[in-house]
Image 1 (cartoon, rainbow, N blue to C red):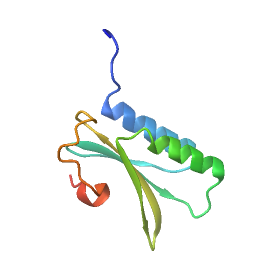
Image 2 (image 1 turned 180 degrees about the vertical axis):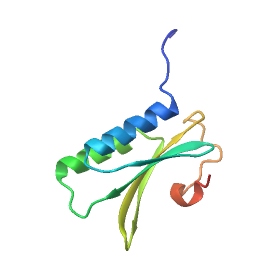
Image 3 (image 1 turned 90 degrees about the vertical axis):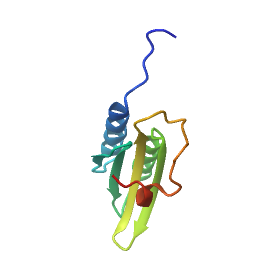
Image 4 (image 1 turned 135 degrees about the vertical axis):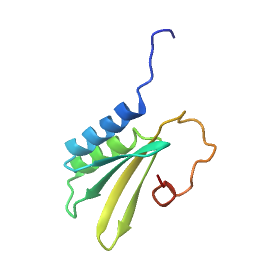
Amino acid sequence: MEGLRMPTPASRANEAAERLTAAGLEPEVKDHKNHILVEAKVPDQVSSESWKGLLRALETADHFGQEVSVGGMTVWAAIRKGDPRDSVGCPGAWPSALGS
Protein backbone atom coordinates (compact mmCIF):
# COMPACT_ATOMS: atom_id res chain seq x y z
CA MET A 1 0.00 0.00 0.00
CA GLU A 2 1.77 3.02 -1.20
CA GLY A 3 1.51 6.15 0.93
CA LEU A 4 0.55 4.26 4.08
CA ARG A 5 3.00 5.04 6.85
CA MET A 6 3.48 3.29 10.15
CA PRO A 7 3.45 5.51 13.21
CA THR A 8 6.88 6.29 14.61
CA PRO A 9 7.95 4.82 17.96
CA ALA A 10 7.87 8.34 19.45
CA SER A 11 4.30 8.94 18.28
CA ARG A 12 3.23 5.55 19.65
CA ALA A 13 4.86 6.35 23.02
CA ASN A 14 3.15 9.74 23.06
CA GLU A 15 -0.19 8.06 22.34
CA ALA A 16 0.32 5.62 25.22
CA ALA A 17 1.29 8.51 27.53
CA GLU A 18 -1.75 10.54 26.45
CA ARG A 19 -4.05 7.57 27.11
CA LEU A 20 -2.52 7.05 30.56
CA THR A 21 -3.00 10.75 31.29
CA ALA A 22 -6.63 10.50 30.17
CA ALA A 23 -7.00 7.57 32.61
CA GLY A 24 -5.89 9.88 35.43
CA LEU A 25 -2.25 8.78 35.70
CA GLU A 26 0.96 10.80 35.39
CA PRO A 27 3.16 8.95 32.90
CA GLU A 28 6.88 9.41 32.46
CA VAL A 29 8.45 8.75 29.05
CA LYS A 30 12.03 7.48 28.97
CA ASP A 31 13.95 7.24 25.69
CA HIS A 32 16.43 4.35 25.57
CA LYS A 33 18.72 3.06 22.80
CA ASN A 34 16.39 0.35 21.44
CA HIS A 35 13.02 1.30 22.90
CA ILE A 36 10.91 3.98 24.52
CA LEU A 37 9.50 3.21 27.95
CA VAL A 38 6.33 4.80 29.31
CA GLU A 39 5.81 4.29 33.06
CA ALA A 40 3.12 5.47 35.47
CA LYS A 41 2.51 4.91 39.16
CA VAL A 42 -1.03 3.65 39.80
CA PRO A 43 -2.90 5.28 42.70
CA ASP A 44 -4.31 3.07 45.46
CA GLN A 45 -7.88 3.97 44.43
CA VAL A 46 -8.67 3.59 40.72
CA SER A 47 -12.13 3.67 39.16
CA SER A 48 -13.23 0.96 36.74
CA GLU A 49 -13.23 3.54 33.92
CA SER A 50 -9.62 4.48 34.72
CA TRP A 51 -8.65 0.78 34.67
CA LYS A 52 -10.25 0.41 31.24
CA GLY A 53 -8.33 3.46 29.99
CA LEU A 54 -5.11 2.14 31.52
CA LEU A 55 -5.55 -1.19 29.72
CA ARG A 56 -6.33 0.56 26.43
CA ALA A 57 -3.10 2.53 26.83
CA LEU A 58 -0.99 -0.55 27.54
CA GLU A 59 -2.36 -2.52 24.61
CA THR A 60 -0.84 0.02 22.20
CA ALA A 61 2.69 -1.07 23.22
CA ASP A 62 4.89 -3.89 21.92
CA HIS A 63 5.39 -5.10 25.50
CA PHE A 64 3.68 -4.08 28.72
CA GLY A 65 3.32 -5.08 32.34
CA GLN A 66 3.25 -4.03 35.93
CA GLU A 67 5.55 -4.04 38.89
CA VAL A 68 4.17 -4.25 42.40
CA SER A 69 6.28 -3.34 45.41
CA VAL A 70 5.88 -2.01 48.92
CA GLY A 71 5.75 1.46 47.34
CA GLY A 72 2.75 0.59 45.17
CA MET A 73 2.05 -0.46 41.61
CA THR A 74 3.71 0.88 38.47
CA VAL A 75 2.53 0.01 34.97
CA TRP A 76 4.85 0.18 31.98
CA ALA A 77 4.63 0.08 28.21
CA ALA A 78 7.66 -0.48 25.98
CA ILE A 79 7.73 0.51 22.33
CA ARG A 80 10.56 -0.88 20.23
CA LYS A 81 12.47 1.47 17.99
CA GLY A 82 13.03 -1.35 15.48
CA ASP A 83 10.49 -3.67 13.89
CA PRO A 84 8.08 -4.70 16.70
CA ARG A 85 7.68 -8.14 15.10
CA ASP A 86 11.39 -8.83 15.56
CA SER A 87 11.63 -10.94 18.69
CA VAL A 88 15.38 -11.51 18.48
CA GLY A 89 16.97 -10.31 21.68
CA CYS A 90 13.61 -9.61 23.30
CA PRO A 91 14.11 -9.73 27.07
CA GLY A 92 11.72 -11.95 29.00
CA ALA A 93 11.31 -9.57 31.92
CA TRP A 94 11.25 -6.12 30.42
CA PRO A 95 11.61 -3.61 33.27
CA SER A 96 14.62 -5.25 34.90
CA ALA A 97 16.19 -6.25 31.58
CA LEU A 98 15.57 -3.02 29.66
CA GLY A 99 18.72 -1.17 30.60
CA SER A 100 19.68 1.94 28.65
